[in-house]
Image (cartoon, rainbow, N blue to C red; front, top):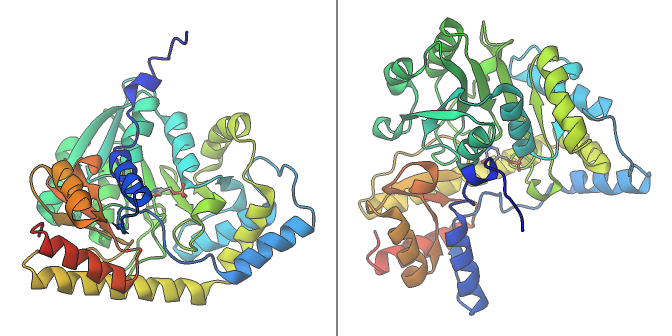
Length: 381
Ligand code: PLP
């Protein structure tokens, strides 16, 4: 029999699984489920990116690449990062199979048993799991009482972050709230990180999906260049979730250490996918703008619809999620939403935010209207 590691016992399967299993079961039975639980854009990958991938295959780019990535892609990534004020060089980049792998490598590279990791709740599900797998102990600051914004919570963050803190995780625009943190909030993070000599993960994977706000890259702020690991990827910006392509940017020294784990685990990201990534970075302004505008319209539609039914939402300025207040028992509410209204959303508890449900608006306006109608007619709103 297997003798499982203590480490793997520290984590649970994704808390969203119960809902997606239930949704899948219902669909198999023929039910028409409006699935608002998904974490991926509902658009096709831009055609020119698909074409670049095919061309790369035809050109025979099917072998391993250098472990940290194809030089031309690393150059394109560095240029992109310089666009948000990060003083980036191609050698400071590791190209990974998805932003998730970049995050995993970062936690493994920085965290020892017992190190303190600070999360801002509601927090994306995998940060906790990755911190625990690395042996970290979690401290959390709850942004829910502050409309999911960081700026009004800076005092609480200051009470939490100390010289004992090893790592702080910041995700703006946020999954699951859609919040985009202000420049003042980011400067507050910088001040604390510098004062207490803390490393910061800045997960900027939703950076291209921002509406009426300004995205601030933490590593662009004075004092942050040598303590930030910037995470980004292609899944959300270019609707490329299944291609599995992402990256991290940090100092040379960090890349040297994390690169060891990278080379001994994944070896490299998929060769022809990396080539398509260059096209995505360089020739998709129009597609990105179209997707962003569509998300903005849907967000506005949902806010209006919820408003009509007296549901007050702390709506964010980015990503494609919002957290709506539901019953205290959000798990039960989400189960009822599927069972009775055939609408799938994710319980806030999955993000350490009980009493809320996460709605993804990566769905057509027609389906969003249908979802709200169904929730209302089943007395769930
Ligand atoms: N970070 C956040 C906040 C996410 O929501 C996701 C995907 O859901 C990721 C990182 C990782 O995305 P990927 O591995 O597809 O690049």
